[in-house]
Image 1 (tube, rainbow, N blue to C red):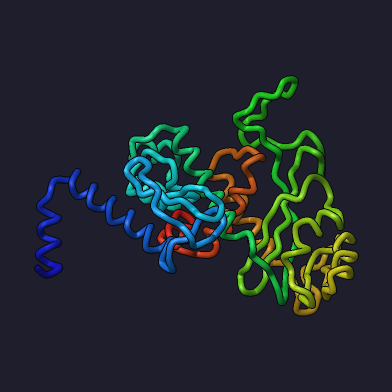
Image 2: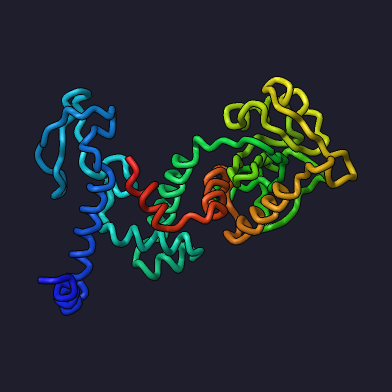
Length: 304
């Protein structure tokens, strides 16, 4: 039987049977990708394992080293879910194509709390995939600010703010959350909340010290906090004087453009709680990297 004959048989099956077969094939793909170099314990990475019964129809294994059990899906997004894998894959495609939670819920027949929980499981895997990112060469760095948001939480004595809105204070204040962005010419990006107010040398170090390579050229505005940071980390510092746009061949146009795109991206969600903001910063980094949804499924959904 050739491939065309198999395809014709599959097309002739009822929709439910097609989905069941697709789900089984996707589960087999998970096994092939996660354990292509042999089975390892996802807890301790040891290879001395043996079969240990079944868990909800899935083969369970026992690690002879750490004595913990696992299945093919342990420590993956798909672990401990009651929904079939094809629903997860459809969810990722819809999420990364910009659909709102409400529209995703309607299309996949899942609840809003489930859709919200899945979004942040996936964003946590994106964060895990990006956590070792480094920048080097010519690195532009600058801060941008967003109003703090307690969306979804009622704080006693704190009056709720309408979506959008503005700070009650002029200039920088404790109401604004500071985000430090650093990017190089290879489009590697570091983007993280550093705190509130004008950035300090310690706050720069917290974000960049382990992520920027020695002898890189750090290009910033005239903020003095970068001077000591550059000196402590053997970086060549090129600062743009206030009122000017560049220092010789150096500028911070790329990082400022990134700030603009980030704020447009954030506005599309009509309000994001500050406690989740770093997840959305990582999401935007993924979008800017132009990687496909299939890359996300491969690197995040089925990652060990």
